[in-house]
Length: 299
Image (cartoon, rainbow, N blue to C red):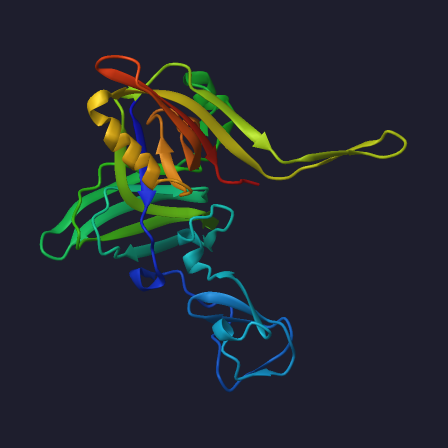
């Protein structure tokens, strides 16, 4: 296994066109009067009124009158948080112009999706990439009996690392879905490979933020909260790549990214940050990188 990391490109509303409309709330109007708790859309964000008789106060420059709630439904998939989802029914498409070359894509924390068609369309060369992937449920175990009769689980993540790099190309995504579907993160970016391979002994775990409380009679109550996934791994590094690896990891500090440890075992991969790394220059030609990854909070 080769460790690959996809650093997300910043996607602004001006880069996105979609069949998912920004109409969950009315657009803010200068002459309108808003009651307390009324919500509007301004600059592709949702805002909530803090006072009654709210007239002529532009949301982004009048803090006593407005509070920002978050991105619109269309833009939730691009805020890099997988606890917010862009919701839609049956079908949806997104057209994304990043203005730079991207060669990796990941769809994270989704539900209800049946298939995705990924196209890279360059204004000069036309369609240079076109693949459709089915996102059906899959059995817990391999073999004909689990496939036929076993319990099945819906996929929640998808990635493709074979996109050609065309700086002026747009990425077109077409989804077939159920009557209620959602996508937590649409991540586009440049992938980088780190090292010669992941060494045996990857450790998987979670950090659970649930709470256990006990009253005066000894009754226990469990309060289920969010959790984050953890991965601890060692990677073999060529000594010729030490400076480059250190540069890549320094650039990714405090940055959410998609870390791909395996293209066969989906649960090994994690979307999050690294907590720390240690480069041991131990051999004449190769060294070992110890890396601790922590996923973003999940519910």
